[in-house]
Image (cartoon, rainbow, N blue to C red; front, side, top):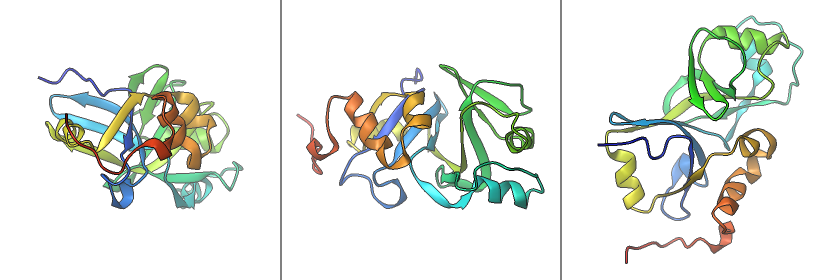
Length: 184
């Protein structure tokens, strides 16, 4: 039985073991239970700006036009997710602990647009999901490393440096990780 081992962890895609959109990805795992796992990729900025998304939703805003929307994962890429400091009351929020939450309702986007949203947030389209036992199998296959999630890395480290910052939590630099792994 799964005990949520990877909840509130970062998953670091192992070089040479994970490819495609997940290559060099850093995923925040928000939920992990007997049904599987759910997380958001937090280091893959997309082509859209948050201001563009708000404009498409007819939400007026004067937020930084350079603030990007991230690729959160391949599941439901048409759906938005806001990973944020656990501040405020929103219609559809998953409180993930350690002062973080994920909200999927329009009201948080309206609050962000008018300057009343959480102090720190990251908007993604889509999420990463694993079925029952799938993440555990991928871990055994050396596809991922894991380390406790750190909100400072999510919100204060530039996207291009997040994977390396999480790797440093493990005491390694990215170049030290082999593209080949095995079991002893």
